[in-house]
Length: 344
Image 1 (cartoon, rainbow, N blue to C red):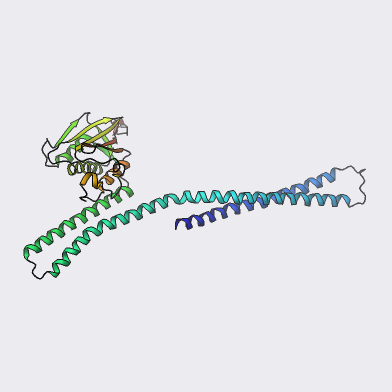
Image 2: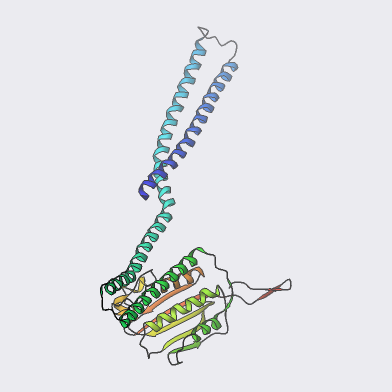
């Protein structure tokens, strides 16, 4: 599809180039021919009266022949030039068409892959629900307890689908909506999110290594970012192992570092953990699909939209660490009686 579109766009580009080239060639030809005739006429007028040409029209014939030959040479040169323009323009047009359509092609491929992955994820819980319902309908001796278990199982699948749809909507909103930035207290926001977890201090340990920092950010997105990273650390660490969160400052940016013990992430999986629907099953979940693989992708999108950095390091069977760097604001500056803030 895109190859045909590239060729069509190449044709249009080349047509425009050739039309401009031909118009320019016609103007050059007419201008040059007119200039040659004018110069020859001026030359004949400047000849002295004593200059005798026999027969009388010999000079006029010579002048006409010279003008015709010069016009012919100009025409041949313009044809050669237009052939070169056609060849060079064809190559340039194709490269320009490829470059023009490349972002559209990449977006289309990403969308197609996304739709395919999303369809796969939707099909799994729907297939489970369909199978359970079909079995229940064929069972004439289905008891009230069995029906309750069936409804409970279907409810779990519906909850999975609800979570998937909410995450997909969040991703779409993050990518296509303009986020309103404001002054967001870094440490206070992180502590608010941490306090939502009913975990003992031995489970989630917090270290603050900087004075209070103010982010230039969209607060709901930052809360979602911290929630995703904490959920991820809790899910993939032993129940009694500590999770360490460090709130600091690095290179004039706020730094959120979260580390947990566990199976870790293999070197082969690590470059792909922020891809949509990617799950490092062998390293993290023991081949058991416990999530849709969208959380870290959403976290990456949030950080990217805030012009920050998100990275991960992991030593299998030891420790996994996620590090976030976010832009901070400078100290408020007073202007015209108002307080404004500037990005650092």
